[in-house]
Image (cartoon, rainbow, N blue to C red):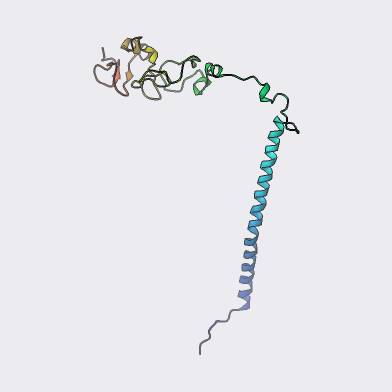
Length: 184
């Protein structure tokens, strides 16, 4: 007759039982550790918020001296539009490889979206120049809305890439360079 179980030696059973019990106890303690750290983070966030609030408010909730928005000088849209702003106003040196004229600050009296068709919001002609590198200024156009190679060559002496439709017919030799050496 066969024995249903092999006998397990007590020297093997006791250490494996001890390891199982310790692992169980540690797993049961993990939620307590994570709850403690979440509580600590919540307390840190609350303390930081109180620190920031104490910089602008006194204990009774009134604004500190010099922090009351009602007494600070406000500016209007016209004043904000007349101040140069944006990435281009931080330096007087253009990015490497950029060609063309430097545009001035925004006109406070100019209305939004009042630009002619084919002109970007930066004032560049859409179909001419390498996008992001060259800007053929719309200011080069005549009052009749035409553009001549003489005007383009003032800004780009060896011509400029045609990046779209040559609507001013400046690329007479069709080499994709408007007002280049081969153009009239």
